[in-house]
Image (cartoon, rainbow, N blue to C red; front, side):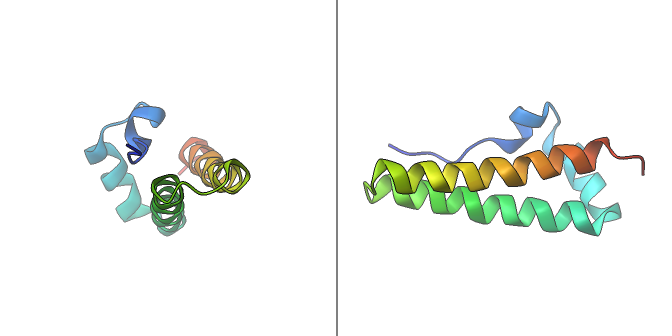
Length: 77
């Protein structure tokens, strides 16, 4: 069964740490919202048993957003 991806585990941060940073950084907040939507699309496509190509494209989109989140977290505040 498809499950949502754990962004906080991938970032090696707690949800509380990320929430605190989100409140101070509107771009980070926006990126995390985009990530949540992209992750939901992946889960939905996997549940619908969409083609491997479609799922792969959605996963690539999700990864792209995650990379932007990592970059934003690393930028000096």
